[in-house]
View 1 (spheres, rainbow, N blue to C red):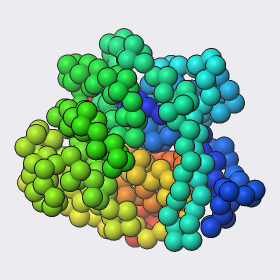
View 2 (view 1 turned 90 degrees about the horizontal axis):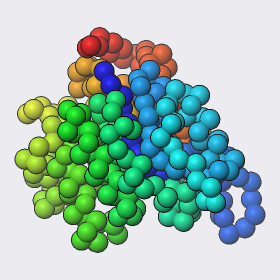
View 3 (view 1 turned 90 degrees about the vertical axis):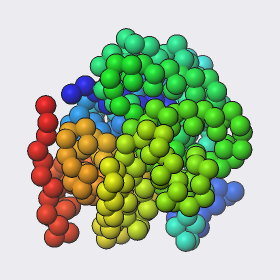
Length: 322
């Protein structure tokens, strides 16, 4: 079936232990945890038993090797991760507000993450890639955007498909060249995975219905809108499906959207119906938010089936295609 690949930031996450805790004073922290949106995505793909690989950069330090060892142990091919001498692995420090919202202090643009070069992307690296996932958070420099464009063009030329989770900061969209680059990526996208309001960010339409129609007119085949605690909505081939979120206690929301997207993409690649794929994706998101740590809630089909059974929901058919 070919491998699923992605590219982008690989970092560690260190989190405050208490809600309301500030990083302006000393306090208990937990971590480091392997993290980075593309890394979480591809780890979830591998946990589902699919061939998975990531292109990225880490420093030659404990944080970098922590990530490589974690990804390898979960089945991810890490051969396209460059270990950069003299650069430090990216990091994110996270605090939690009393209302559940999070604040981040990132070191990405000045870390090994930013050392990713277009030269790392070539046909030899991507020769087995049947599906490539683009994470908008990775598009923080024009050099990386060039690398992403190159990857997309290679995969499309060899008959592969593309998924795109925009996950971009609003200020990025104020840069004309950045908006143009994101629009370019959308032109190649088969599966679009925005969260809530993001569906209108790359559209001329301010309302969801109009934005969806415009995005489909650009060649996108499927759109899944992630709505957090309200579940998700699927649009494709004239169909709409709305799936409620599973009722689970939220421990840490970090990585839930990445696990959701990875599971939906993987299930569709396996030949599952949209409805089956959405149920599994919802379950993956639920397991992710129930675990502390960005990658600690990734799951395989056994865990997903068990959760669906506990929710008194029928486990989706596991039929696949060759």
